[in-house]
Length: 139
Image (cartoon, rainbow, N blue to C red; front, side):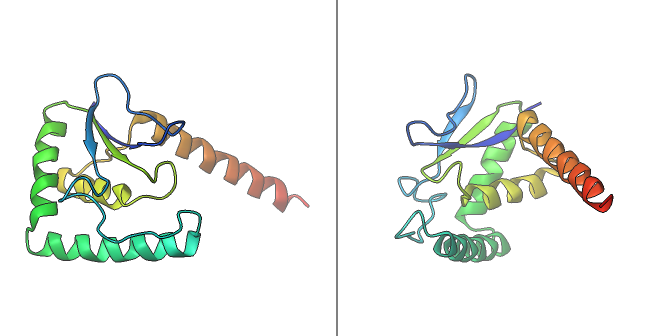
């Protein structure tokens, strides 16, 4: 099954894997790059604001079938044909505007596009949280 992974352009970050089509989504990409600048990549509140502003911009684009939506439609056709995609940004593994881009693609295609290792990690984290909650309720 094909998927969309968010990967890093930074050395030491999560890299693209063999067979994945690498799609840069930093500002070098005039369509999918985030035009809203994050001045301090360590400022979590500023990152949240930038991501919220980007998602508002992306939602407006989706509403008018703008260039972001058209490019995601093109990528969706590749995913449907079996091509795994690695959206590459400087943010990963931190929260990234690639996440709402992937979410829009998921809505377009009607399925979860996270790679299996990301889905499994989420299931494990949820199981651990449930176990910790059950353990805490015993006291």
